[in-house]
Length: 109
Image (cartoon, rainbow, N blue to C red; front, side, top):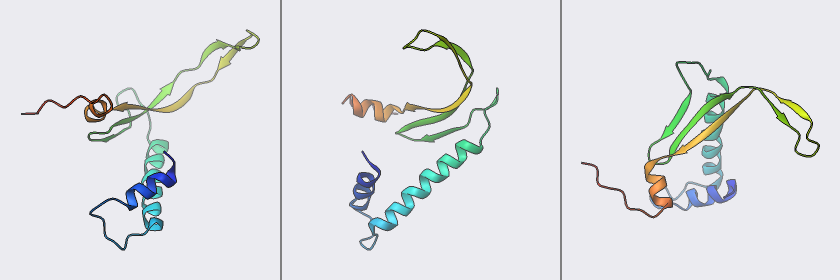
């Protein structure tokens, strides 16, 4: 799905005000992703705390720090040093997993 497809789907969602334009939806989508990106850039990964964003039913995004390591160039076989890096991982929520696998959720109660 592209950004434009997401904007069109959100704009056509039932229950939204009829005067909500695709341009307004695009501004909202951009603001949400900019805020998430800004949060993950500024948040620090420590031993006791890992920055995360959880959207119930969808999943959890977690900022992770990867240590540097040695590796090999796959074309030449020469050893190389892979520098440390920071990344964001995603773990799907239970509802998304069951939807992807078409398994009905057990009732919670």
